[in-house]
Image (cartoon, rainbow, N blue to C red; front, side, top):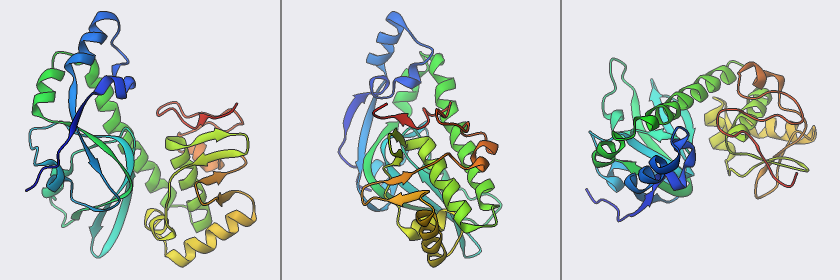
Length: 259
């Protein structure tokens, strides 16, 4: 197994939200102590442990930036999960499928980025700062909540509704509010969207055409542009409040750009 060369960063300077409950001298000390190894990844099929090394005692891998899709299969059918900035991963857990014959471990990088390796040595240093544990735990809980939201989206009978809600849900996580709408700088093929909404690619292509005809969703060649108000179904999922000044409370929501 070849482990990729890496750099190191002061994690709390890159991700200050993790230091929500630290301040003053203790915050400065934690910034210096909590140095994490960083490994990059590039678009294409991805095998995390081949690049990083097996870390059975580590806390996990924290996505600093980039975009990854994870596929899990059961009985010849697959479900997909989109992972990005701030998500916490433990890919070695895929080796224990439990009572179900899940086919796991299929990862693909959609946008290049970097991971912070929260290994055993990092965990030892983290133990000096228990104030950070709730913040790290919230990342795992947040990922679970988004997975639950995705399950709710899949129960929508219309494919165009699924695609519309999904793109808004992703915009809550990674979008930017501008004068012309919400920009989602995430390049997703129609095939990838089809995986995420449990539909066939031609059906998703048709749904995107209908959304574009109704001036709701447009691919500009650089980003998705979402116009109008978020779908009412999104508010029911508890991810965003409907309205012109809507922001999500947990992950920053759509950030304002140019307002």
